[in-house]
Length: 367
Image (cartoon, rainbow, N blue to C red; front, side, top):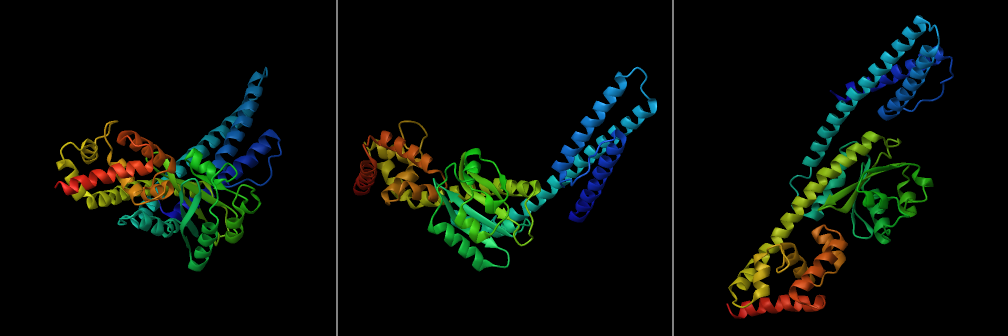
């Protein structure tokens, strides 16, 4: 089904719902006039409300000693029309879902050949805009919300200015910030009335002049490691549940890409250490070094991920930087480091790095 036919069906369905509201108003002698919100969700709620009104009237009529057969027929006819409208909404929803999947697949194909996390985050905003958004922002999460890259249709300079504002003072992700809900709940959301919302970051709200925007989480290994933002500023419209579904579905695909690319980067890092790891395995009596080389996942050895982290520790990287490079949460880094200290019998980070380097040096000199 094409976009045009879906849109036409949605308009026609709105007309059907409006006719049902009018006919139920006449039949039950009720005033149901007033603006009706558009959208499949709103139509479903309206039809459910009409169903309840009509069935209540029918039950009341049946409770009478001599209910009018014509009245019952009219009520049954209205109920039948309501059910038909609900079926049409369900069918339209299936068409919307298929369209969303097709759009997201096309958008994800734009970043399918990226080989590094940084490049993936840099290219993704433009792919998000291909879904029909005017602006898209990719950011990372490590205790703070750190803006990474943004695309604004027809205005790249504005994108740079927005990122600069967010980078200058990275907002802390606590319960006072609406983005925290997406991180904690790991689910997509839409933020409305942005300029008056006290939980929206004020500097970003002022420079973006957004009225509503969507947020979806990027999840790797069960942790929210980033966020995808999108809005329709140039179109001057608020986002809908369809926009939320688009962002959420894209974010799911992006999360898989992030996991894949982070593995590729990890393999590249390990590849540069292969000589050293090989020398470790040849050193007799070097239990810790041999354990790291084997990379088994139990309490007596270092896992491959722990090897990555201890190498980055040796390079002087902070927990936050390690988290960003490996696309994991800072809390996960701390957990890995705790295990590394225990396995190496080290009292602190410096001693763990010293043991790691000492074993590497010993194997190098005994080769």
